[in-house]
Image 1 (tube, helix red, strand yellow):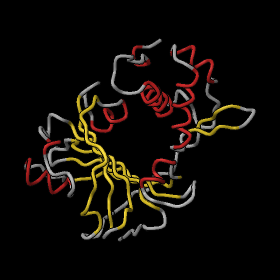
Image 2 (tube, helix red, strand yellow; image 1 turned 45 degrees about the vertical axis):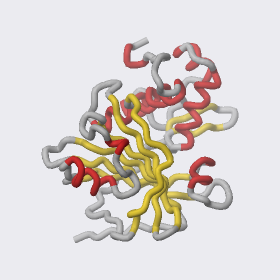
Image 3 (cartoon, one colour; image 1 turned 135 degrees about the horizontal axis):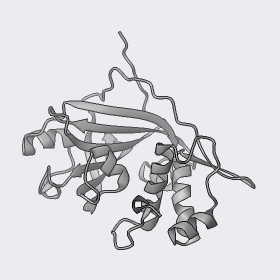
Image 4 (cartoon, one colour; image 1 turned 60 degrees about the vertical axis):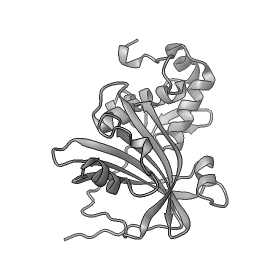
Length: 239
């Protein structure tokens, strides 16, 4: 087994999430090719010396995220990559998203996905913030943000109910100069459905992932937002 494939049983990150990140790397690297069938649960459980239920959790998480598809009687397959289209402008109205409710705020070791997105060292500490975002008085999004602890010391002692970008400027003299943004359609998970106060299961939503960088191209923040599909729309301006 390669070193990169080793699961750290002493880590605070759940085993199934570590395993999920390893599977994402296999997909992104092309080791698991598009439309190809991946090894079955028993094979993966044996390979990583984990329980079959842990493997299943990791696979189902990737199914929820649209990276894998399970076909009854056939196995699990890698989905085709979604087409990426350049977005020339993307913005939120000023009154949108000013109010937040903090669901959790903690310091954790970065996952492989966060490490890659923010160009960190393996296991580097980050702050993870999970917040509800409001439009006026209605919950419209669940927002999960990651920031390197070394860049914003003492963040958890700050007021986290406003916008993080204003906080970074006023408290740390750090300004985001550029964003890399991806937008993709998703289906709400049960937890997201409850948090967004949406009726019914399997409702559509928009997942917006943003990586913010400072003037020297230093990546400072990764934010993943799940927006209610019935409360938002995208506008694109092309010239």
